[in-house]
Amino acid sequence: DMDGLPVKEQTGLDYASQIVTSTYEKKKAPAMHACGHDIHMTVQVGTAEALVARKDEWSGTLMMIFQPAEELGKGARMMLEDGLFERFPRPDYNLALHDNASMASGTIGLVPGFALANVDSVDITVRGIGGHGAYPQSTKDPVVLAAQLVMAMQTIVSRETSPLDAAVLTVGSIHGGTKHNIISDEVKMQLTLRSYKDKVRHNTINSIKRMADGLGRAAGLPDDKLPIVTVRESEYTPATYNNPELMAELKPVFEQALGAKNVLDKSPVMGGEDFGRFGSVDPKIPSVLFWLGAVKPKTVADAKKDGTVLPSLHSPFFAPDAKPTIDTGVQAMTAAALHLLQKEK
Image 1: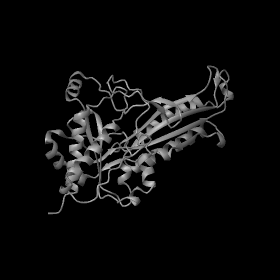
Image 2: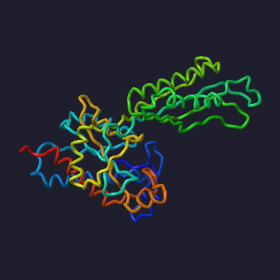
Image 3: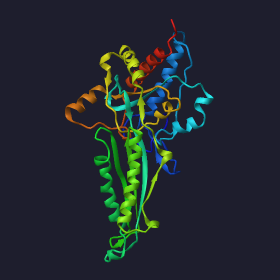
Image 4: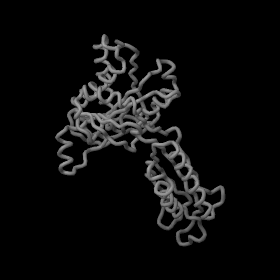
């Protein structure tokens, strides 16, 4: 992936971004590589250079994909819709890495199976009948209804989803009303949903729609005033699933290249990454994404000792330990590619 973020860099580095650019909404905003995609691109170029230099050691077709719009969750889908695997050879394997803001440079992290989550963005418009704040009996208050819906939706995870299945429902934004003594006629909410299994994803979305409709009817709203639930399907990012067999095959390859102590077993997270789309085509392509440590080892050790919270991805203070991180990424990617493209003996 190649895209940056509308964040003003505050790392204090000599090469800190000073760029001001236009967002997709045509607004001026500062920009930095707060998610480390500059690391990803550099590793990609370094890996290509290393494999070209060692061309006599492998055979096959190598495709290096530089993808835009990962932060929007759209880049992989748009490339596939544009005929990526028809215009170019369909790969037998997909490999990717992502820098990690809590792991030491020189290390990589492996997660077999689900590694990153399905990501959905949901908009809810709660409608009502507005009026004077002193006479609520003559209104249908959307603020109260929205509050009920926020609390009701929490039971989707705690009471409608198996404790063995991961799910997150977060109301990230809620806005309604204009003045102290006015009952508004509308409240808008924005939600993010996370899951691994598609069944959990669909059940969560259906439950939100059911609860919004049911609470609206319980409040006495007519059909034309019931809440509107909109799932932004164009922004949906599918879960990233690491093929367990391919991961098991590559683990000793990574250990030989980097040393076993530098190849870590990590747990899945509920963040999102649209790399998973490249493997979910029909028929599926075995795929692996691994974590690439990006923080100075001493900084990680000190943070664990002191309980300090390290700057996360997307933070204006995120500053990867550039050279060791890039070197490790190139070594790991090159070793994996050489293994999968090795010449038959």
